[in-house]
Image (cartoon, each protein chain N blue to C red):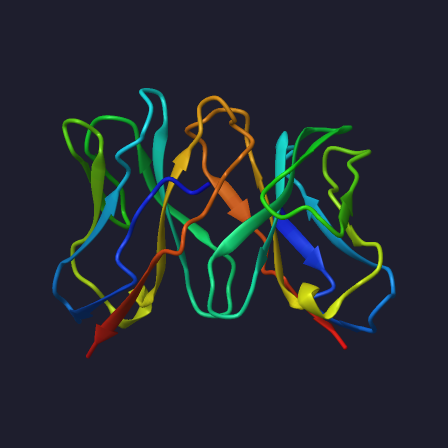
Length: 111
Length: 113
């Protein structure tokens, strides 16, 4: 029931910005957009989340389209440690308990 | 230390045996989740719980049983393990607000032989 679409993989050069896209055309008005990442052999970890406005934190920025049907996670300067699978997730407002992951984007960072 | 811990980290069991995976969190989060992740794939939700004594099925609940008698614990039981249940299992917890983040354990790698 995952309601997001992401590219399977992306590649970036170290020290360059990375833009990871996510489409969520069926998003409802009160769904929050969450991003998590999973480093090799680890559990997922929170990256950032937002509702309507763009958000920044120490790890990344989240740009949300005006119609909220897509969003972009921005890593400003990719490092080798950012190589991971990045998941874009909608926190369902009517089934709050259901926290579904899609297949994610595998980010490869080249030195 | 505050956090979410899973035990055991690794488990090998035989087909047909019952096995229980443990999950413990120290934040008193209301919500807890169990996921499985098969090799090379994303996470699939098995069961979730909104509070003690409140649990419900996720995407792939067949073959699994959960309970939650205390807020901090959310054990997952495979009543009769099958080879198809070989996977990495992740437990997670989060607060009551939709905009709060979830915290994940390090996972339990289960092999059914």
